[in-house]
Length: 272
Image (cartoon, rainbow, N blue to C red; front, side, top):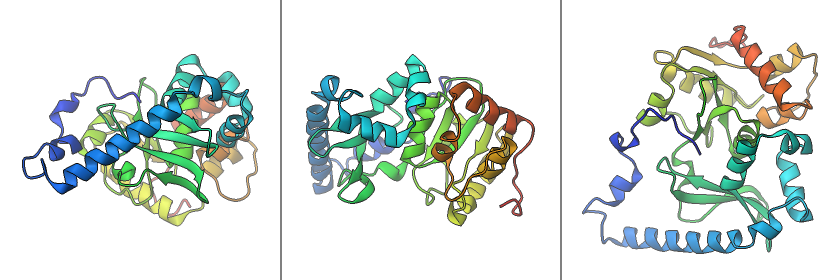
């Protein structure tokens, strides 16, 4: 996870400051937190210990999980840096045959993990942790920043090599000061899940929070983007599903940037 380099994170009040508070320190809540952290570190150390052998397309269960995230051509075309980022935040449980995404805080510390397709659910968080209390951010260049939703899309975004800020759920309705400051002066484009009305509504709420600080702000209708490429799509649509219609990372990212740069975005309530 990469953060905007010109921002001093020490200036922001973050979760660890709360945990170091004397009222919290030594309490039962702290003991429970420390036990959860210990269990999490032990588990991740265990799954990571065999990652070199099984975290590879030569291991069919891992390959199946990886291809459920992105088409094969995305992995083949992804840059070395993008693949390294993907490897850093993911691992694989060979007993459960499930992909795991590690959740880092803004100090680059692991605060949780989510297992994909575990116990009949799409993404299951480590019990006792709070992975949805912050966004996941990767802003490494001067290009546009895309606001996306959900852990599937965040893995796609890492592989594409685009700047992004991922909100964990459509209940995340307020950016933190740190997140807002990371978007100052940027072109910021929101990609709501379609046709989910809650996702669209929440993206509008968040877009209004950055209108006064960003260079440009827009909400992208991915259906309109695909139609602009003469592509018809039926059903649910998010970043990962849009990517599946293409065969080139370079073409897809250039087309999305061009669509955004031409003003094909909206804040009005009528567009969806």
